[in-house]
Image (tube, rainbow, N blue to C red; front, side):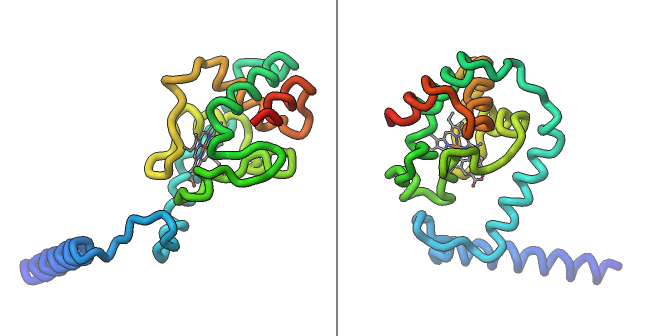
Length: 169
Ligand code: HEC
């Protein structure tokens, strides 16, 4: 048993040392154009999936009135379009240079990602660590968080006032 524990600890130390040497020899490139590491996307997608568990049952605190959808478009144009683009296509400058690239949420004029409102709210409220997706829970009001959420999930049926805001970006 003592032999096994010693072997285990030696293997662990070797692994740690290997990782340290890999890191200090420049093995971990930080430039955003570098392709993902093996398994990196799988780990990121799994973590997101687990993070969103149960969030879909949270019900919106506002209704999807014309007013709320238009306000949501205003919030989006001011805070999100710079990374997530607008309805007319064209990848924004930020999105072209980021890793992971911000998904173009209104591509083809509809809600491109397809998450339910509760999950969208959770992501906007808390952000996504290590990706560039900011948390807006402290900078937008509760109403603004729900308004932009409702606008996104109803992107294919927006009133003219909302479309005007999105087109102005
Ligand atoms: C500085 C750039 C940036 C800004 C500004 C930004 N985001 Fe993001 N956002 C990202 C990135 C990068 C991701 C991808 C994260 C990932 O791959 O897990 C993301 C992911 C998301 C997702 C999840 C999409 C998916 O496919 O999983 C949603 C929803 C979202 N953002 C909504 C918003 C909203 C709404 C706003 C504005 C209130 C906003 N974001 C502002 C960079 C940004």
